[in-house]
Amino acid sequence: MALFRKSEGEKPSDKPGVFARFSERLAGTRQAFGQNVGKLLRRRRPLDASLLEELETALIAADLGVGTTESVMSEIQKRISRHGLSDAPAVYTTLKQILYEIVRPAERPWPKAHSPEVVLLVGVNGAGKTTTVGKLCARLHGEGQRVMVAAADTFRAAAIEQLAAWAERTGAEIISQPRGADAAAVAHDALAAARARSVDTLLIDSAGRLHTQTGLMDELAKIKRVLARIDPESPHEVILVLDAGIGQNALAQLEHFHKAIGVTGLCVTKLDGTAKGGVVFALAQRYGLPIYFVGLGEAADDLRPFEARAFVEALLPADEEAA
Ligand SMILES: Nc1nc2c(ncn2[C@@H]2O[C@H](COP(=O)(O)OP(=O)(O)OP(=O)(O)O)[C@@H](O)[C@H]2O)c(=O)[nH]1
Ligand SMILES: [Mg+2]
Image (tube, rainbow, N blue to C red; front, side, top):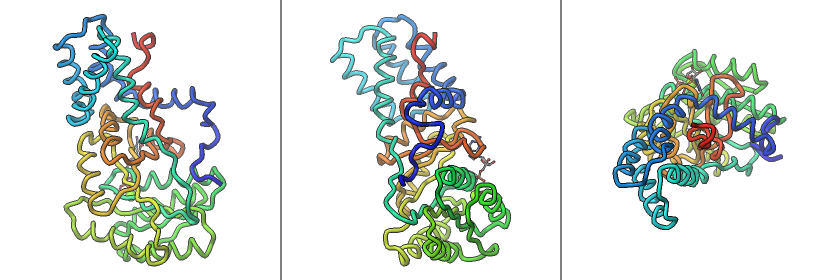
């Protein structure tokens, strides 16, 4: 069975549903794009140097980040001369296409290559790791999978309880040890149990940490080493969970975590409650990692596979809708 195939209610034929959900939940970021980019480009204004300068500022204000804005602007310049663009609405259409091309490679299904598929979720405090594990449990359970979670955040008793509550709600098995236990030992026991019980997917929750906390970053490396002792290819995925609300800081977090332990994919959470979702473009460009999922709310079904087209359309709607 294909892991993470689209579940009920979001088959490719159900694009309007996916588009509507993205549109509705991305209201904050859409407003940021509308106020900055949309307002500027939807007027029938001739294309000149000042328009392009204002566009550059607008993209930075919409949280694309300086580097991504620069590459977008240089691509726009190329297409202006290639296609003879002459007014703002033509640039709007071209910009949408360029933004789509940036995020399109990040829309990649999670490859199913192992059984159990071992997934380690990492990130700073409060990014949404435990909630994402819970939502993934619900999603995979809905696909008929046998799912296990490992409570490798052993710092707080509340963290273990939070995960246990998700496991109970979603029918997942849980492996935990009392607070203060060695996180790597929990991960080790969980993988051994997952193999013995023919689990399809093992999701390992981890404690929030900053890259400056060397001891905690070393702990992640230890979890990886210990897992690899049982299955040299595991963990098969290391997913960095990033809170979209932190804007450009997400990029620095990606740099640090990637350097420290090697990240294989991203989950961008809390896109529903922020105006800073433009950072997704910068994240998609950096390292070319897949964005497996986005968090569009707190409920179990608010974790959605990233859809590049729906994302761009939500932020920069078609001219007729946007007017
Ligand atoms: N609106 C919204 N809230 C979210 C989303 N994902 C997570 N949250 C909320 O963010 C808060 C923190 O989520 P957790 O899952 O506990 O974060 P964590 O990374 O496990 O936190 P630590 O274990 O303390 O490091 C909770 O209140 C979640 O409900 C999302 O996509 N949208
Ligand atoms: Mg947590």
